[in-house]
Image (tube, rainbow, N blue to C red; front, side, top):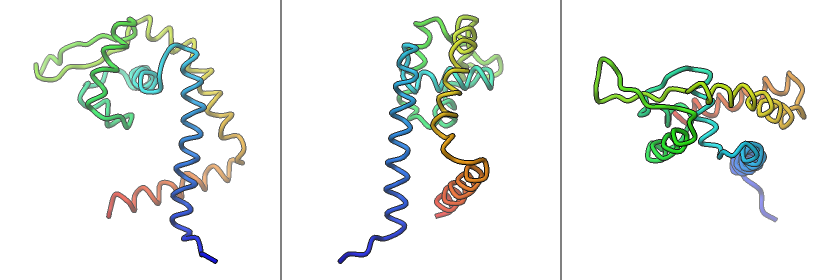
Length: 144
């Protein structure tokens, strides 16, 4: 009889849960003609305003090598544009367009409802506990 390492089990459950949630959200944004990375970039610009392209990857947890491709796709769709930084010509910003804002005005509330639906299996207290525990593990991992 083998004993299951509780930390390994927690890691496995966390990864499987994250994958299941990602699958639901991928399907959700696909109906809007986007992938998760495109939607995440547009959501960042929608909520936080213009962002240096070089920093977008860190904000939405996507590899910097993929960001240029995602920005190109969103630019072709007319949802964002690039603008040069007035103080540093090496820095390029991504900015949401009016059609990008209209897209997010139309679809973000539905996406938010989908996320709420995924997590409504928890009470408010359980949700707070999960957030605290995940933050605790994340901060500990960063310190390692």
